[in-house]
Image 1 (cartoon, rainbow over the protein chains, first blue to last red):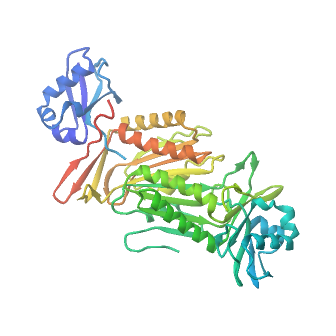
Image 2 (cartoon, rainbow over the protein chains, first blue to last red; image 1 turned 90 degrees about the vertical axis):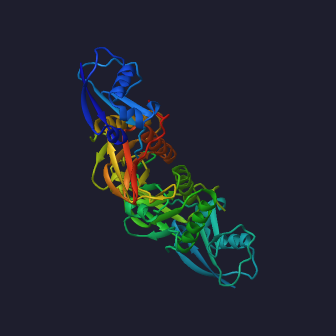
Length: 83
Length: 83
Length: 150
Length: 150
């Protein structure tokens, strides 16, 4: 299946892209999908502690248990700093 | 001695004046001066509970123990309601 | 009535002109602060179910300014804040018009919230300003909490 | 992104235009309220002693707006408040420019102070917006408290 992965701020700088379409196996849990995406982008792993990264699925913070579906919008970013 | 007595808002409406020069004995305590002024203005006593009136001497809230001097600026008003 | 000595940008004013809260808030900005908390008090349409047509504010001006200055001094002793601005409007005000603006700038926003809340509470208790509510069938000078002061 | 159904005047917006805090505060005014509390967050010159030249704010916009909407719903469930307005600016901002305005109107000012303080705290924790500080000798994306969310 295909998903769109979005990066913002520091993660966009690390990856060098703001949006990438990638292929993943069907029926992955969000937690597993995140690990697989991190493996595809060594710069993300190099520049960021995994624990410091936030993961959103379809514009909602992910707990990790969500099942990712074809066409989902994923996002990986560091702790927010607005205000 | 002469003092200026100022009224504001509800007390000005009661007295019908905003500023009056009156004569008082020398060396009165603020507490006593207030009582004497109230006696001069029956409408003040009629319209206001004495406990609800505030008394200022030379633009400072009076405790009652201040000694009033010739030329002092006294003011009598109800509890403030700005804001 | 603006106090502006070097770093400090505190001010306290009484005016009959309309209040621009954005402009007032901006005047308290110091370089090392990141947040301003502003209280904007305005004329309500209904008080206890009775419809107000407009309000008239009156002050014992020299004493009001002295009390405002004391408020600022006391707030700065009590809270870790940088600058304070207080502007109270006098005269006739229509429904929805701003009667008072209090802006507090601080390095940490917690102190600005606490100080701003304390300032409006104290201003309503101590600063000699009175408001008259005018209704279709009469008018009344509003009296504050008489136990609060003096 | 303005929600305006009958009585309610809540709104949450993201814009690249300069923010006018007075105008934003005025949009939350309901007839039965008497006080608005407004938080005005702005670009500091110094953070931990380092001089910032300017900031750039970026957002995950659709998610940011969803999170802002949730903030408003949660604040209204938690506090006795009438209307809330939140506007966050994006893009390049100079020192002293306002990045975020949160205005809360309530019948009693206590609740407005509490809700406004809660809203800025939660916005900084949950709304996907990031700021980059640009210095004379470099730039850095500021990272929030990583334990705060998710």
